[in-house]
Every structure is written in structure tokens, then in C-alpha cells.
Image (cartoon, rainbow, N blue to C red; front, side):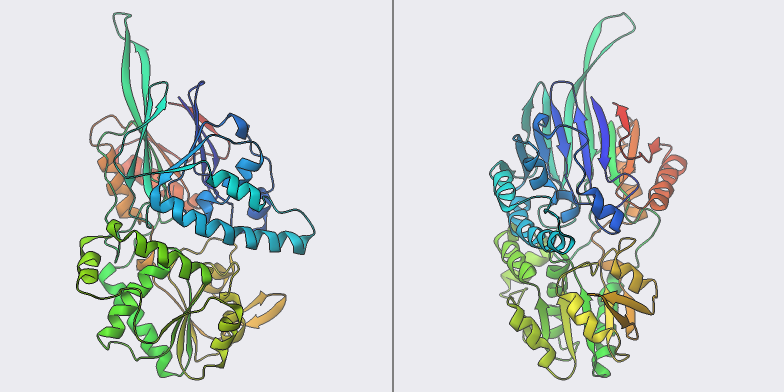
Length: 464
């Protein structure tokens, strides 16, 4: 078994890992590269392997940086099986058309063809098969897989791949040992308002571990709701608008869950709250469908008769006219809109209007990748360009790391320690983080846990 890192190496986005036995080729994730101009140009490059030779693609979850190039893979010849959890497939079916619209608009502006078309999207989704957690999936040639709950977003998975490793013992006799590699995908940050905590393996031989927050510790989870309440109160008291750039998937649903509690317990003033995202509206419907994936607390709230995604003052806007009408609402309000890193979507229109207002505020509740507009605002740039227009940044800028759906350094080390508790963990591959974050986590793994860890480079291969 050989693993090669074709994406997500020394970068947060573009996850794409190839396992190759010589007989069977398995991809884990096929994500878009996001953030800088250079990253986006990488999406136009041909895959470094032959997509027609790929037998299986496992999707850890439905975020764009993990599934966004899947239709491109189909376009270039892939006809194998796509395997993921059932919610992941349903969420991807909602999210990928939205990605296609953005990709098509950008391609038109630049006078070139989009990286894939609707027929490619439809074609690859016909190859998708959904599985429940903890089901053993036979792949042939003695290779098996299991999907475990990653606790990151609805349906997110830790992918376990098992294979038979043949070797010679001291008596020169052939022996076979089952070996396992785990891919964390994006590991969750428990406790979360909706989801179960991640699965902790104890029998890993190898692990591919994300590191978006590999160098940081989140603030106390109990404090995040207090921070959210404080930011809302302060902004509304000034008569301003609170903008929350939010990922349509999971982050928006978590925010709605907590806003529902704040409103129903009169902890914040009752003002208009808008979810200005057709995609978030559609994805919230998927969340309602799969409420059996929620944790016990969320189940208890639902069983008490509370509609956790609906409360007084909440409005979902689907059409562009409804979105524009938000600006006609005078007085304080809260706007949750995509995209989460201000890389596109309706949040840009609200940022054009309110970033320059000292009475308003922008609240970041997710990771801001280097090069993104969100990161530049968060880093304190006093002027940014949106749709070619210079916009002054005078509003309050706040961030709540506790809302991150990514595990922090402490949680990642705890997971790695558990994975190695069986005594067989030979190597940890640290991926999906900026290089300094990945490097710090790898060093902590070696020094604190005494487990070998490496930060692979793009295109680097390792024999397992």
C-alpha cells in the first residue's frame, strides 16, 4: 500500500489523497483549492493521476474543499464508486450546484471554460452510494473500509481503510497482518450544539490528521455563546447591523440553534435576523431530514416541541429581490450570509454597505484561510476591494474561535494519542493546515506523544 498526497499538503484546502495497492486505487476526498489566486488556478490543472484508473472515492464530508473537484474528476474519466455517509451525499447534491454557479460566473468573467459542467456534476452523483456509520464495506482484494462519525458537520466521517500486509517472519515464513489507516477529514470540536463527538480509534497503524488549528487552542466552548450574545447586544445598542459571514453548512445551523435559545429566553433584543443564503436554506432542510444524527441534547430540545431552526424574527431569503429588501429595513438587524470567508456570495453585498459603518460589526465564526477577504478584514486591513470598489473598514471586527467546527491542538493531540494507544501507530501524516500550523502539530506529536509525524509535501509518496 502506497499513499500519495495530491492536495491538502501544507495547505488547508484541496484535500486529495491516493491509496494504491497496485491492484486497487482509492481516493480520499477531491476538494477545490481555495483562498489565493494561485490556489484557484490549481483547480484548472490536470490531475496528477489518471482519473479513469480510480476505483473508489471516499468523501469525508461535503465541504467544498473536500468535494469541489469531484465533477472535474468525472469529466476527466472517473467512473468508479463514490462512497460517503448518506447525509454527505444529500448535502453534496445541494452544495455542488451552488459551487458550479460560482465557478461558471468566475470563468465567464475571465473568458474561459469552467472546470466542470452540469452534466459532469449529475454524472458523478449517479456513482454515489451512501452508507451508515460503522458498516464494514468490502472493496475487493482483501481491502475493507468503515465510516466513523467525525463530529465536524452533519454526516462527516473519519475514513478507516483496512488491508492485508504480507511479510516474512524470522523463520522466513510468510505472514499476513491486517493494517489500518485512518483519515480524520476535518475533525470536530466537541461539544457542539447539534452533533455527536468524534470517534476515537485505538488501533491505527497510520493516520492522516488535519491541522487547521494545529497551533492553537480554542477559547472555552461555554464562553462562545456569551461572546455571541455580547456582540449582538453591543451592535444592536448602537443601532448597527451585525454581519456574520457563515458557511451555509453546519455553521449556519449551529448559529440558528443558539440564536433560537437566546431569543426564546429573551437574552437578546428581538430584532430582524436574516439567513440570506438560498443554499443555507436548502441545507437546513437536509438537517431536518437527518435529525437522528444529532446529539442527545438537540434531540431533547426537538422532542420538547421546539423547532430549533425557527424562532420569532427569523427570515430566510431565497431570491435576490428578498436579499436586496434587507437593506430597506431600518434599525438594528443581524444578517447571516455566505460565504464563510467572504470569498463570494451575498455577504459581499452587505459588506459593501456596512463595513464602513462604525456602528456596525462583522463577526467571524469560522476559519479564514490566508488570502481570503475574510482573513484580510480579520487581520485589520483598513481598506478592502469588493467588486472592484474600494471599501473602508470602520466597523467593529470580532471573531469567535469557539464556533470553529475544527478540533484545536489539544483535541487533535488527544485523538492522535488514542489512535496510537494500541501501540501500532507507525506514522502520522499532518495535513490540511497552513505549513506552520502543520509543523507545530507534527512536532508536538513527536515530542509529547513520542509518535513519528511528518508534514508531507504536495505530490510526496510513502510506502505503508
